[in-house]
Image (cartoon, rainbow over all chains, first blue to last red; front, top):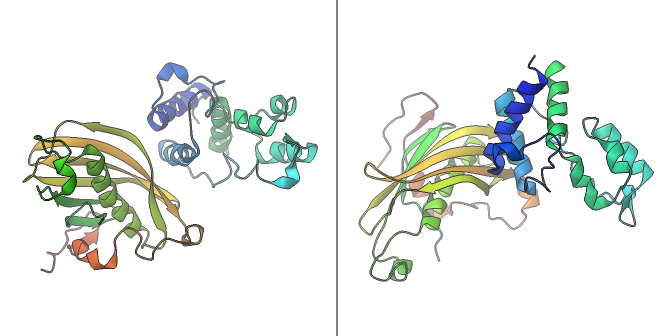
Length: 128
Length: 163
């Protein structure tokens, strides 16, 4: 079972390859979209590379749940509802949902996707 | 305009690697403008040729059951030019294949001269989400001739192509 640092270093390598960013830009707090410039198609690429680099299978939708922002029952007036936040907590236990809940604007959902979130997800996956 | 930027496969190892060639000719319209007095195959079209070669490698590995589209190019670099009269050789190798896509790496060469190196990510989409895609999305059926090469599973010797 790799240490947290080992997982992080491998995630950093993966993101450097997938996104063409510099090593030092990849910090645990960095957001994939805002800080590292990831676009939607990059998420598919990132998952391919993580699967290969860590030799694991990542079921689609597990690391990056899809259709969060477009599910109308979970969003009202541009804000994610309490029900939606509960759903996020359930589907993304690896993300810092509490931070998001303080300002649950739909456009802030992408801030859940951080480098640290990926590391946490993988640690859990690798220890399973 | 016909959008076929490879002339023929010369090697096709299912699920592993493939090589296609593209003969650059002075008859290609765009070479008149690219560039006047210095006709060279546009690098963008070299990317397209590599993507067609790699896309077919991915599509075939998925039994052509989905629509394979170029998703992104994480890396590409160019080291040279291809001029009229040159034969570009596009070699691609499958790095990863998943039901929803694949990654290939490839090179373009003229003889021994390296012209381009690339990595390409393809997405594989269900036909239902691309309703207007033709059944023969990438390779029109009349061009299937270019696939007329010996094929064999990865790691095994293939038979000579039927001519």
